[in-house]
Image: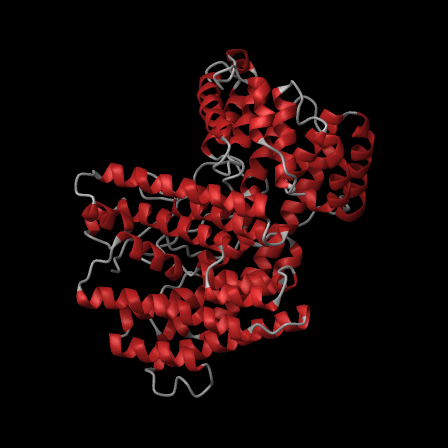
Length: 555
């Protein structure tokens, strides 16, 4: 099931906002769990923070004054909040933004397309119940079609396009909103000035809700800097935030590299992937904010071990050895790995130690030790890997649904989010410890959606190289086997529909049902967004968005 593929990164020509770092090269291979390019890089020199800008005083005070001044103008207030969110500095003004929601709510039934759609998006993102069909009814005719006069309102169309991606699968108007806005924005680029045209193109290629806010923030800042009327205080605060984040990410990455080198698994298991930068980029995207620094480091360790275990199952162990490895995890004690081969014993000791350390951290911070739940999550992952190993050993081709159901587990997402769940203290958010235990018994819908999106995106990426690699056991292959009348293009379109459906379900879980806290829901969204970054191959089998994202936020 494993196949080799080299990837060489040469960065795209996006002009950096901050002083550029030296580009990095890397190589790696795509695999069945999870695929993607391997990234190797030396970190750039630490970013120097501006000495003439006091982040905590000058910037924050100026923005607070602006928010107070704009209370008299609802559209201006709403636009300011939107810019703060797009620049990823809204977390400094949570109280002010929450108090402004009453003003924002007054605009949701405005006759102005921009005001109504932006109000809807801000309200839905902050957990308010609002109906898209009710909001958009005033902009459509008796057949539910949008009036042609709106086709010239570019700012309104951009906001409508953003709104359309908050679809929960039950609002028919949002499907038409996406089609209408996409069509007329694409047409508008022909007569727009180069700057606005680039912004529209970027919005169409990377829709706001489906993409990482940190990545979009840099592009939005460049757009704001190109406008004739600028908010210098907001821009300066955003730049300082970018620099602080980059410095923190670099320091975290250095700590992770020291831990990984000290662990010695890369030397003991030469066939295992050694992709520390890639592993770190997942929690860097998922857990955003300075307060989550320690969590990002610990989750990177868990991700690295998922990859190592994956490689042991794929490339090292026999079925009998892997069965013993799985039994050792279920025993969960220091004597459990004694009978294992050396590499498995070292891997077991690492995951046992790190998982217990994370459980102790959760207990210290939140008063609950989840080690038994985390152990069970590892058991589920190992059982999933065993299923795939037996399929491979017997030459059995599973049913597409069986493959996908097991692929959700072996994506590693449920295991990783079990650790995120307890680090964020989510057992306090759920009603009882019984709810926390259910995390081990079944994958909650929000996490399941993220895992399924990853598995399908991953398999779509694998389809690009199947002419060279042959059958890779992907969902696409299995779907074609069960549906012989379908073409590969039909199968890929089917997979994209499944991904869209999972996004709708994820929106429903996080916006409507609100099972988890805002921070955990945001982590789920960010993970789903990061999938698109990690698996969006271009025609040359490169990952241009990932390259751009890595250079912006880390190098």
